[in-house]
Image 1 (tube, helix red, strand yellow):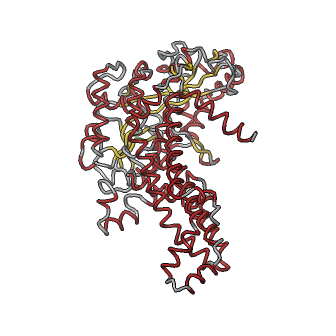
Image 2 (image 1 turned 180 degrees about the vertical axis):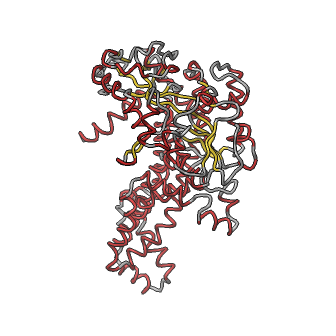
Image 3 (image 1 turned 135 degrees about the horizontal axis):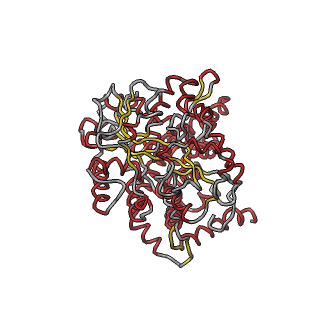
Length: 272
Length: 290
């Protein structure tokens, strides 16, 4: 509780206080219940808010589609290679976030393999812009997906790994085919992992700004970039704090809706 | 600092085309230099002796300067010698970047518009701002960058970029050419100052040390025989060039690091008042985080 008070409640309280200040960096800021900061933020940066949710959402879905088969395969077919395979998923984490993101600059480079292949498949026009992938929304989403993939894969693995294989056998004994057994037994039992994975991916992804900064172009910035520039470039602390709160509110609302739809017991994993 | 507390730093370096240098001096957040500990101040180059923000250099000393111009990859494009070409040439669409620094970008574009960047009015601001915005909206400008345009330019993702002179020798690519745009370039200077509560004597002694031409020459050019890499920007210290040539001859005679008077005469400073105009700053920041 003390830990939570010192490292969560106090900074958050200060941020809330700051978000209601007015003034400027020349003359200092004063607390004035400036609720206007919130309205201005929503009015001026609606596009970036929506884009953040959109990019984070797409990245979460792709991460899920990619991770689920991988986690499934490791959990049920990994055998004695399980630990090694898991290590392979976590291995990129031993390299710093920034370097991993910069590596994507090379991967998606205009004369690189990926762009050439997409060009040959005639997909460059759909995914890219003026013949490049780098500095487009596609590159940002790719970077976010890659960077947060382990946050999706690991919870999925944990919940899949805990499933008793005898339950699937039982389903098959009861004349369920493989697909039906998966849809009626395996997938529902892995839901706590799905929920944990999507939340762990979506929440940090929505607030990310590194990917948009390094891989995005002039029209692909996320709300994190705006907050960063308000805090560090303009020293406009009140607006930046207000935007942080709006983002936090939006994410909380999203999580609440999500929890309502899938059922709260999945969030806590009590379904097992 | 507004509470008069020390920040724990003895020297900070702030650039003159940013709002904070002027702000710190205006607010009295800087300590006066101990000039008795800086006899080498005599080596300060003449053009830097009386800047508008600190006419007698009582509080600040230049650290390094740099020029802002255009760099292009000569294997990918014909020479790009003007902002008109950079922003207007359809062959460069999506292949160029613009600096995210308001002073640098605006100075170059205002010069290209035929306006004076040292005296910004709403009219000249709007003209330059809209021109950059248009180039950004149309996809001509691929992104706004700090000095991270370097690697993509060397790799060939970019054909040309608005660029800082010091970045180019650091890239050490034979294909990259840097030039002052036809209508003029920007010059900026990073200035050392002692924040309130800093140790004035220690800081002054350090400043004296870097104003020794031999030390400055080594800092600038590096010394390959000792594996020391230079900083490759423009030194504010007389006589540094002579030493730089001894330590590292090719760097010591690089015109980007030791530019001619003719080049320096084409350089302009951005209006300091515009750097503190909240409306302009917000507009600019909204553009670069679009």
